[in-house]
Image 1: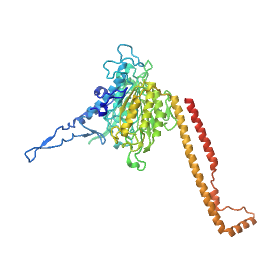
Image 2: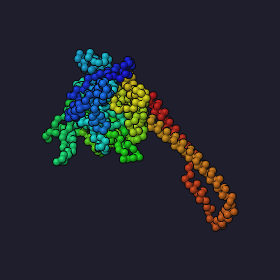
Image 3: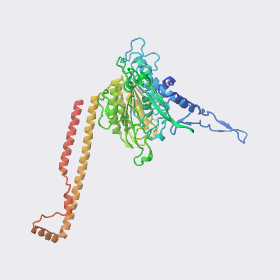
Image 4: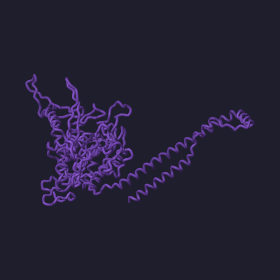
Length: 577
């Protein structure tokens, strides 16, 4: 049933849909394996529906007493993920809501009475659930999905014992992206991008994206009578313009194309998943504790900084990297455990922790993800919107630590990228976010979702401009330099005061010692002069003279550098205006 908050009229320009058809198995099977769906359905069917009435129990008295209804039995998919009888249906409903969101964005493009024009929002079929053109949709659905791979939970290379589905059953974002490419490919939808800002790495989405390229999976087999390995081919294309020759699964022959570089169509449009799919994720990564390294990895143990376009530090020259910071902290290489070359572009930025690093998080998006997303130029943007990176969230082990203002900023940036590349079309899907402390309206989770949806709902025609972003980046760098200089200046003043105090104390102490040893000092000096020797300083005074700093000159230098930074900022602001 819909939330009570949906019973009031929506704000102007916003429409609420409280029901949506479940996803079709044909659409789910574009992402997940049939064997996984069977096992998931069987586990849910094994949980009987809960009792809805009181159960009479005989007693020694003439009248019957009753006991409270017993809770329905539950099944455990893993140590984190619990199932009930309705879980499979709920997962299909969540995935179906995402597919319906795609339909709502594109039904007005299917105009039978006039030629199709992807750039014109011309007509809306009468069967559309919304009577006016829309540019984006937020799907408030559960269970989440970004940890669900083709066969469910994705194993972690660094923490195999901690692998779990993380509350996820079906990958809603991947199902929606595959659905859009399939159903609307003849209406100009040829490229989709998925970005993920949940605090936990979207390892399931990454696995589904990797599975759009032909590959091989190897599993260990252990029986009472044998032990070995079983390898089998894997391939779940969303676009699927691959021949057996190009996939490497056919017979060698003339004209065979490397699977890493499939051909373009004669029209020059992308025809393979490698060119049509993009995935980027920024998340916490590392050991949960710096004090106790044995405490395990931050879930799910994947998502180290890396870019699938890189191989031995080299970037493919055919890819536009304009605006990307490729020479600094984002110049990583793919994780050794992932075979990323040859598939769609995948970018990960792992934010180290524990400890709040909101500025690091913002720079990851601003300097790496957003320029790459803009260069990819998707026809539809999907957002895996997890809000558990909030500093008041209980399930992030103090990794990342952003707040609702950061979510608002990022949503604004993504809207501007969508405006510049795909007419503002966005499908945002709820992932993590669990802290309800403060109530349904005042919790950090509710405030974060509200900030995200508010930006999506507000009219915004601004477009992402790499030049403006570079100016903002330069302004922020100068501001950071100025802040660093001010800190150095304050420290220099403190050191100067401390040195002056120490010198005064040493002087006072020296004068006191001089009075007591006045006669002895005179004899020593007279003896040295007679021998023609240079008078020696006391050990205390030599130590005080060693390493003397001209603090006045240092302060003057810091002031000059601060003035230069301020002047550069003023010049950047004037240029931007």
